Length: 117
Image (cartoon, rainbow, N blue to C red; front, side, top):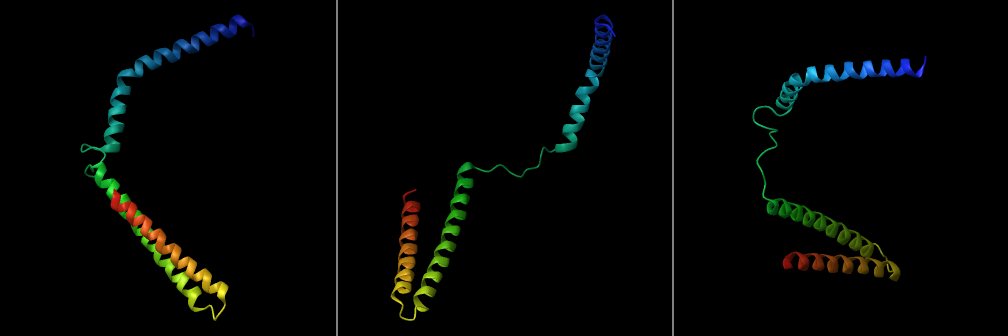
């Protein structure tokens, strides 16, 4: 094929696609509206009631404090276990004591930071 034939075929295809796109434009609007209504319905997306950002942040903080509390209990349990099962080994006693002391200091820091906010 020559360049002229390729150009004529490409132009004819372009005009055909342009005409079909213009012809489909009125139906396109109705199709989009139908798709949106199908996805969200007449009552919207039904995501529930809107929340105040302050309430969301308070819930996140409450969840984080719960996680900190769980970590504190686990560290206290682990430190106590190391301390009790030391059987006189000073290294293990020191490690258990250090773990308990670190857990208490961490909890105090978190509670002080929470009380400031």
